[in-house]
Image (cartoon, rainbow, N blue to C red; front, side, top):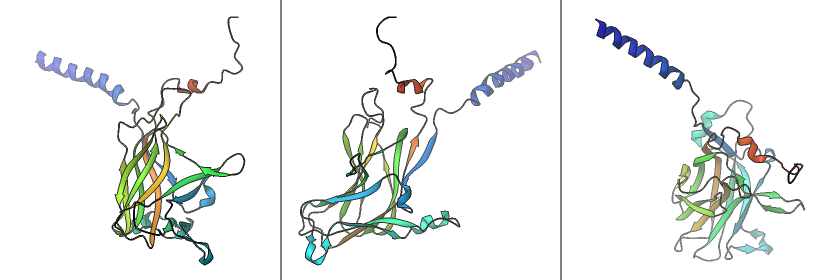
Length: 249
């Protein structure tokens, strides 16, 4: 009987110790962060640009200058259920491209923003926290083209991540995992603080047709551990010492 009582007391003490521990906040907070849903371009602090390799088709007399980019009404069927009354018209980002000949052709879709002089320049979207994956919808035209995602790590190096083969029709949800070996945070105060989204690159198969190709994007977002860079006193890393006195007092 005494032995049974000791066991009960031990269990109660163990519960008392464990309960406060289980109530502690989790060090990980995975959030889904939207980069662009393309519905209201005016709400973004950046726009989208496109550029292509040298053999892109251009005929200014016929007003055929490629690549062409625009916003068009549309949405993947799987996302319709998330629409609510009062939402703006659903739009997607679309690009049409045409090349003069088969070969190793490519084009890139990237964020852009005006600099201080008013000139439009490529803009890299900074990620928040430590990114686990990038998630988006892409519309394929069943061409043997290859889609890559470009990111710049915290050390300044650009990585090309294979995303999808575009030989399918219609919408497809694409998830790109971020390898753990890509540096996403720099320990240097003078260097980049985060990994950045650079853009998309689409490459043609050398034997595939290049006379007329279209692609659309929707719901570009990413999943990230947003608490990974938060530690006790993390705000002190941005302290401005410009008004601090130098030398000894």
